[in-house]
Amino acid sequence: MKTIFTRLMKDESGATAIEYGLIAALISVALIGGAQTLGGALDTQFNNLSTFLSVGEAPAP
Image (cartoon, rainbow, N blue to C red; front, side, top):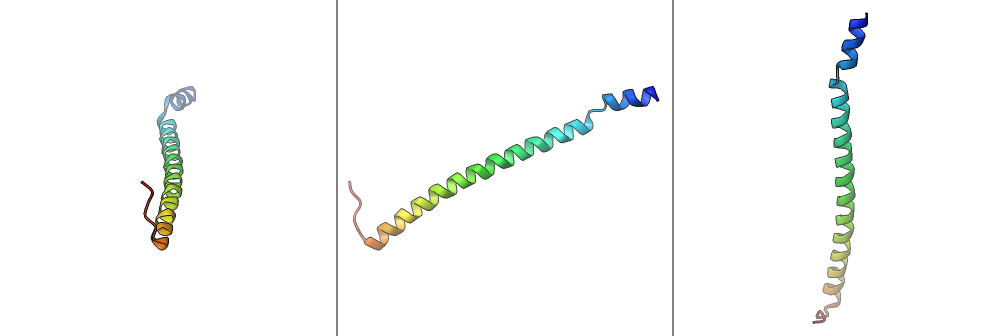
C-alpha cells in the first residue's frame, strides 16, 4: 500500500495537464480583452469615417 501511495505522489502528469489548462485559459482571457479593445477602437474609427462621409467636409490639415 505504501508503494502505491508513493507512486501516486510522484506522478505529475495530472498536474501538468492542469497547468496547461490554466495557461490556455489565461491566453484566452488576454485575447478576448485585446479583441474587445480593438473592436472599440475600430467602432470609433468607423463612426468618425461615417460622420465625415455623410457631412462631406474636408479634413483639417
